[in-house]
Amino acid sequence: MINTQTETFRGYGKIGEASGQTAVECRFGGEAETVLSAHAGVTLLNAEAANGEIRYTGRVRFSIVYESGEKKVCRAEKGVEFSAKVASEICSPALTPRVKLQTENISVRREGASVYVTALLGADVCLYGDKTLEYLTDGDLICKRESFPLLTAHLCGGAAEADDEFETDFIGDVLLHAETVNLADVHCETGVLVLEGEVNLGVLALKGENSLVSFERLVPFRVEIPCEAAEAGRNAEGQATVSDVVLHADADEEQGKCKITAELTLSAEGCVYEETQIDGIADAFSPTHAVALSYAEADCAGVGEAVKLTERISGKAALSSAVDFSDVFQAVTLQRAEANLVAGEEKRLEGVAMATLLVLGADGSHRGVELSLPFSLPVQAEGDCAVSVLACGMSARQRQEGEIEAEATLKIVLTPKKEWRVRPVAAVEEGEPLVLSDSAVSVYIPRAGDGLWELAKSLKKSPEEVSASNPDIEFPIKKGQRVIIYRKKSLS
Image (spheres, rainbow, N blue to C red):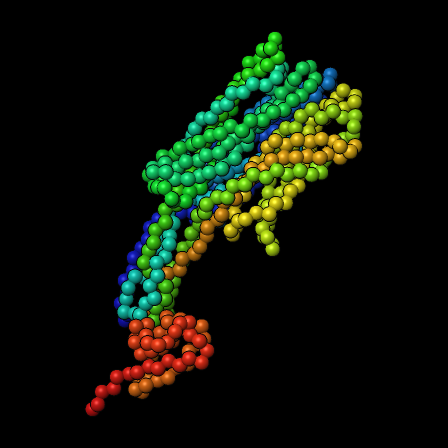
């Protein structure tokens, strides 16, 4: 019977991922004759794990800008709370879910005297929980020892406030505001996880009786989350969302100016990764018996250092409806972007920047035109990456009738995904005794490319014995090399 020793690693980490969608609907009154733009800002309220599913609740702030039957531009806003769930076979109450919500699509329809705005929400879920790994550390075997890297995740959360004050030309009313977070940097300091970036605050306002204007501000933020595991140099990831916004507009009609104050509340979640090395056995054999090895497996998932880019794109935009020279472009609002990393001869970031263009027609009525500007950019990135893209500074002009040329600035963050699997020996089962050669000298012709360990395992000798018998051999083995094995013989 082969004697063995084992140890158990206990940690906490990512167990798996899940995703799902849900639709949330809001009803507005029939006074909204023509909806010019619609926005849905989503906030997560709570999330919990159950058997076979993740349950979460949230709030959607629906905002619409519309033209009434009298051709006046108006606004309306409503909040809707919702609950939804994402199915997951591995989910149990013992796990902790981290849910990221985003608005994937907005649709508007009229039924009778009412207008319905529907937001399709996507939910990406990471599940965290306790992880154990039992592995072999020693035994009556010849072992190939190895250091295996394992990750322990430390979850944390916090909040912060950011504010901005700026002056504009006189405006009569704020019609709509939208916030997009650009999380540019996540790093550890001693005892603190730091999230830094900027919030792109877009505001659509009424200027004069029937004129629209849009403007945007990049509001910097810094969130510091206490975390005992945070140390300089450790990798971490996080997410930040704007949970509340308060806008104050102080107008000075005589000076033709308006001072706007924005107060933002951000909520943030983070994960600090602590790497631990365990000393285990990657392979083993017995010099006297056949053995069957079984392995323990653990998947590790973390992140690498993020790559940040800023690119200016331009080109012909696709339109949801036609425009001509009789249309007056008044505002570009609700700027956003989405993109994917595409592998090929060179990696490219391919996606589209989108916005709502508000125009005033020759008949004095407003309408909203959805424009989209595709882009394809070469990028330097290692492996698979999480992609975050912020669109800002978007503009549109009509040089040729019916064609829109658009420009936008993209702030891009590529975060490499680090994933690996460790597979140390967990147990060994003893088999039949080996039939050993009794000759004093054996000549063995190994496979080309074998290393010392592979050769020793084939010969059922320790690497030290093989090296001592063949001090001049070089590894990896070259074709045609021979190995000499000496065995001590006793005279009777």
